Length: 502
Image (cartoon, rainbow, N blue to C red; front, side):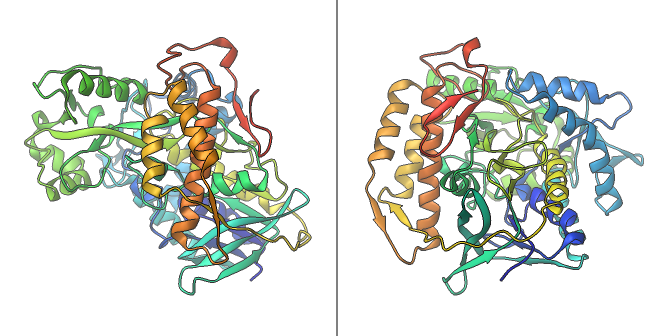
């Protein structure tokens, strides 16, 4: 099996890159689960873009830089906001139907935005509709094949050059080798590293873990965004209650019905306020209340959230919903340049698995879908220029699986690398992870491979968080509660070299 280009992941970034690649050769897109199971499908809030009459690209740039808390790559941000409008207009030409008011695009405002610039589709199903639009476009193109239930186990590398990947066939449980002249990591996020997460089960940090093992640079991995408002109803998954609810006037209340924070503050601020309030009152949750807007408005504006909450016994049009913070988005990942190129030849990354520098220490709400579109397209265009086939190798992959169980790992992540961190907890986490015995297996299962990736990514997060002795953006240290100018740098992790800042 030898396509010209291998795209790992079928979310927004992967599909957009594949579309850009289709005219340049045979493209194979593989997904670990079925093709529609990606973080893109769960993106409710919308996509931020400076297209409204009262908005400007410059203002979107300023808001993104402010949210990033001193660590955004300014050039990457400029690319995002300047190329974003054309990327959205292209989607509209491909058939995506954003919500409108009187024939005009309807823009809403979310936390830390200075203008109404967030577009929605289907009320609260923006990511799903965007992925569907890209999927339809991809399927209309020759030379493009999509395969489901194909989990990548490791990248194939020879002398610092990636020439393919090992793939676990979900139907036969056999390991296959796929060689390609360029590979794109668009594997999405890492939320399942944490006990509480809004991410789908497939979000086990696979792209970051395999890139690190292969020798690629990982950057800013300590910056994890915890969404303040995940549903906390009995028997319910940690379903995300979009920030757009607060944008439409939803209030955060403690169990006594009192407001206790600014609902439109950045997510890290709101998450810490909720945790502090729960600790103060001894409660397991707080409430998010939009019932004052009326049931008809809530059902129409947020149909998916309304119906999902109703399924678990909560009518958010009439009563407040119990909520609790949960791991939501990774600002860091596999370091890339502006065209998605990593530090390994022929390896590219885009979307949440990548660290483009756009998000800095804290992502501005609804910038992630736009990043997937813009940088997915840029990566695809750059990969088209890769000439010739790489030299194959005879790399022997060893599958060593850590003995720690997945729940142990996720509890450790939540307790030590969660919303509030400190030296003692982070050092203990590093020690437990580094000392965990490894079990060699010739035929790893998907569960074992995911556990290996969770273990590897958690160690990267804990190591970088321990080294960053300050609080900034999505990284909060109770023993270093303030920003320190000497840490206004990016963390860099390369296998065998520890953590450094630059």
